[in-house]
Length: 66
Image (cartoon, one colour):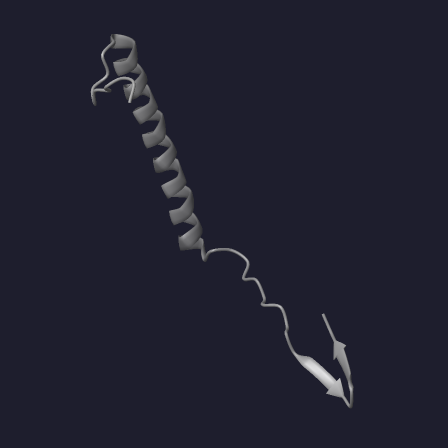
């Protein structure tokens, strides 16, 4: 290890930068949580039908219907 890093920022610029990044991340988390909760309350969205995996055989042939 070349240098020992301290857990606290040393310069005023670094302190302001950390506060700004924390504020932006907090706002993003709040907005995403609101979007998710609104989606859950509305019912989630369009349900996706699972793809059919049924195989039909006739003798030695197999027909795959998508």
